[in-house]
Length: 272
Image (cartoon, rainbow, N blue to C red):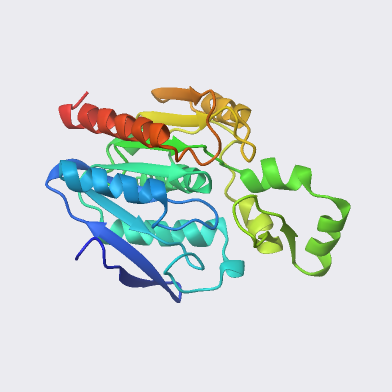
């Protein structure tokens, strides 16, 4: 499949757009975008170009209601977008993979690591996860927003927004990135509580590298520090970008992302 022409698979009744660039060099990389973002964003395209130049596979998709995928955005939940991401992963990913999650995509990546690491039982020992062939070989998280519905959205809701959530089933919040406001539905908020990862120890069974801007107005850098506290069993590296914002899409930010992914890929390939 041409990496520039999307393929489509159906997941739970929605046509999910996928771009998969096969590679000859392990590991492959898997892009997981943020809330209302799509796979044609700057960081995703930059990583796809890096993969093309270095021979690594690159897998991208749009969640339902996003980008080129079908489905209703307002019907989306973390569970639904997680199921779609897992379906794409199972369909296209081969061999060791690095999950790269941006903002909400970091939450999806962590939940994917939990699901992919299961060995068919409820026992979640890390050695069982490492023995699971589909478990990620590495994870890169950019401005990670795990549990953002419970930790970042709900605490800041106004009385009017709470009333709208009850009466209308959703509320709106102005966006700094679009003339259209963010829409948060009751289904998204309630489903988010079922997918919380910052309630205990997270064991991914692989190295994790976090990139976080200290001028991030959407996801405060302290949220990344909290995430690190919940990853005591893994090899975690946190890079704080002093003047970085939430997007981390400036040329120097993209260079940092490339260096981070490249170094992790080399480490995985060498078997460290």
